[in-house]
Image (cartoon, rainbow, N blue to C red):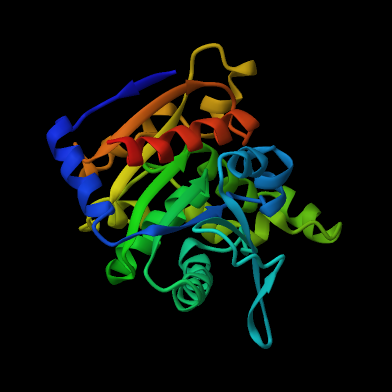
Length: 276
């Protein structure tokens, strides 16, 4: 594992002090899945079990229905908790952001004063960052992204092309509408250009917070699938114009999907905040 420190250590310490100047006795970790993912990706991979061994409690799983936000497996015990969510991961990022806002508003009411930390995998990392830009007063203390296409990915462009091909018609006839349902998201995750969401987002003012990007290295990847889905340069938050010099980049080897090692790395990142 390779960790890069693009900002002076003194500046980083100042950010950490700001992070813990509020209610440091309570922290809420929100786990945000990527495209076609679900809460089970965090739980079945072993990540949540690693968190629990380090003292984080299962704070529940949030979903929405006619009555608003519902909370399953709720656990109010402990000062550090993690939360999983239901999200329409095929929808555009703007649609998903509205859903995320409902959840975070609910958590704010339920755990007032708790330090809010967002962790996003793949497209979930971009979603979390979009939310922070849209809602700077929500006071998200830290963002940790894992293999996220912050500057876009060619695979999204291929998805757009496939949606305009006979493949989409065949899928519709077979009742498989993933390509059609995902067109808005694919457009959002195209490589950054002036006419798409990333071309706007990456030049917006980002709120004061601690930013971490976990980058999947292209070295020794199985069949190169990690770099094919999201290239390494796109995963680095320091490649985002608005965040240059503000993020910590952590380079690890491996493919694109979530795995138990991400839980161990996540714990180390969270513990480093308390040691600094």
